[in-house]
Length: 109
Image (cartoon, rainbow, N blue to C red; front, side, top):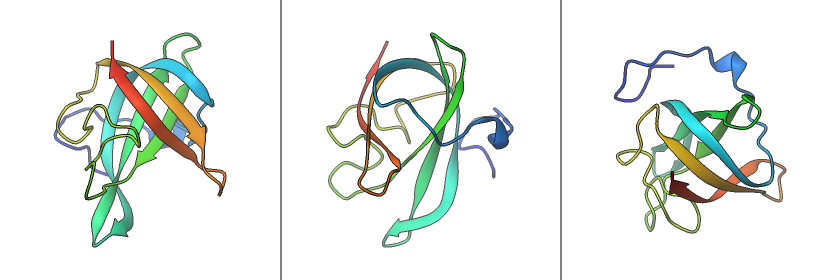
């Protein structure tokens, strides 16, 4: 999986797609294109974070949508162009009906 516009290479196996539900703070370690096509061929964007408080590594997938591009559901940072590895964020996450994690809102710290 190639990195997206950065030279940060990570081992994606170290980043489970299991995020806490609620508000938490983390550093963006890397971002990379996913393989899944969600809407008219637009790919998903995988985001790899290290939680500030615990140091745990976490991954979350964000989808492209016509109305918000690669932003969380309630708006905020466009992760395709407005976030770089090494930056810190406050994230709000929730669980979708299928059990996967959804990025609700994001704020840069």
